[in-house]
Figure (cartoon, helix red, strand yellow):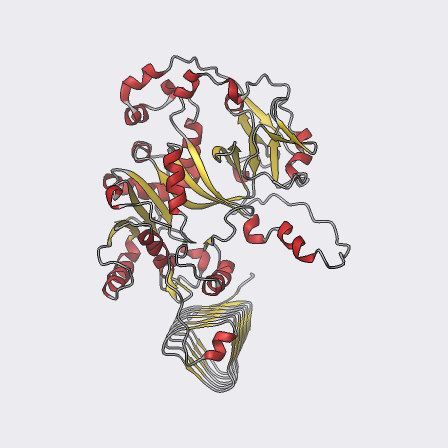
Length: 544
């Protein structure tokens, strides 16, 4: 696949990587290094984002770092360029320092003077294969204000339909009914996205934590429903924190100091601006899209309506998604209302959607709404702000790897998937992983071993990653672990389901299971540890 940034359009998009984030959730892995430099299959996390942009054709990249990590990240970038980590020496990475603990939108405000065109923003915890080409095409085609990368979370959990085809010739066993999905509340509480039509236009977003705790309800205005009579709402979508913005969005961020975070503040604001009459848009936005002359585009009157409350019993629990019914001209298939056009998120196999089962709980049929094909030409003229999504769903793009390193429990699986996955030169932006030819046994056991490692006799390493310059004694068993650089493990040790940071020293006859061991920690001979966080300073129960 060719790059979407050709030599004639080099200045069309700018690229920004935000390394800001909460490293505390990965304690003790980030005790000494920032999350951006944590090794993923023996390569810093930051390198995956840099190679993604390089493969897409970018030569100038703005890298936003906090003050405390300016030196260590700056030194890594300089060393990587010297050592030829990139395919070209023309790549220019501008390290821009911002204050600590800034939100993602605040970081954009800090570098606002450097943004002069449409720009791409990548969060520093993302690893994905090459999807920027498709996203840029969608952004251009839709004349979008924002194009966001979203992922159907069922993609990571596996698609039940795909497994059934492999068992057609097997005798089916009676299985217990599936448990109804529960709505999550808390820091990682459920987020609901609403979509319109085939083009994956995003029209709605709400988080469970922003609703009334006693009676959580989805609130959608009548004005929006008149504009979009068919809305598919689901909480099975994850925001992957990769966005393409129109250039004037930076003016909105600079003008409104209340915008702290892209996902929590900027995105809902842009969604709210959609379908608004031009007179209702802020002055700075009118100026960005055409000045006062834009007021002459439409004389459509604005109807003010009270908000409509669409209620679902969130305590029961509800299904994974909610379908808002349409007018009688909707498409029906096997008794299921799919809307005038089936959204890419709707099932194509005709199976009864969980959303359809609860359609009678959403009573908006008595409303006087206008179908989408009744929009007048003047109404289309006021459609200045457009929010679209590039959705990776279980039914499409299943071969595209795309994950974020959010929690500690994600770290080992992400390492394993990346180095084991099939390398596709056209779609995989990072280089193929090289295995130590002197240790063929470890490769066959599903492990990745870094350079200059010393391995003793009767060593068994399965489904693990060993960093560089590691030393393993005799009779060592390692299973499902991440071992970083310069780690020494003595004789007769057993380590399972654990993460050992750099420069850890484990003396002989130790048994470690389900632990995270911080940088430079020393484990004395015969140490037995299970489900603990071990550092030089303390030993804490992992589940306390």
